[in-house]
Image 1 (tube, rainbow, N blue to C red):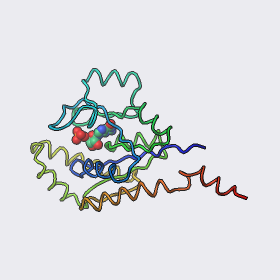
Image 2 (image 1 turned 30 degrees about the horizontal axis):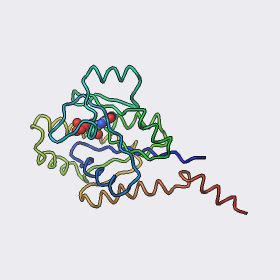
Image 3 (image 1 turned 120 degrees about the horizontal axis):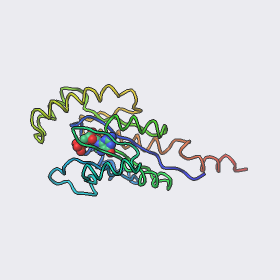
Image 4 (image 1 turned 30 degrees about the vertical axis):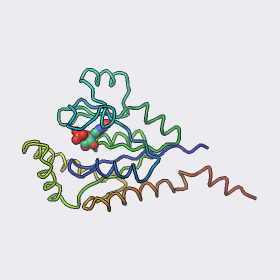
Length: 203
Ligand code: 5GP
């Protein structure tokens, strides 16, 4: 039986440092395909179409919805975000592990369609620290920051659905934690059935 890829889902409130952690983990762990989401939101400075997101109009997004091209999608902050199905399926079928960085509702939907997915929640160790980081970031005005904090509180309510909690107070430590999670999942026997059976059957 050919090994299927493992689907890793990374979530965490805005300001938790998911993007930075993810970038480092992908470099350090290797063999992970990052799913590039589709969004209707405008690109931020430095964001590149096809790398950070596939930036689409509302009409283009809705036509993808109608064509059943998303594994999951949500509306958030007046924008829509979705995980394209084809690419993720193809990688998993080929045995490549895939990592998605999505918010909690999307993660819950992934859990329903892929019960085996490994859900990791990244957060600073306190709400106060999260609030402080959002103030420092300075990319959003005060109203948006307050909204992001409110959403963070609702995202914390979904924590029970997650398999792992990765604390991001120290970037290096958090990268180590997430990398260790990936390495451990890869080492599980159920993810190495072919080899395990071969070894069992040696006479
Ligand atoms: P941002 O606009 O800051 O890039 O992302 C806002 C939120 O949308 C983040 O929590 C991010 O994880 C989430 N997000 C990005 N892409 C997707 C996606 O394809 N599906 C879902 N459900 N959430 C996404």
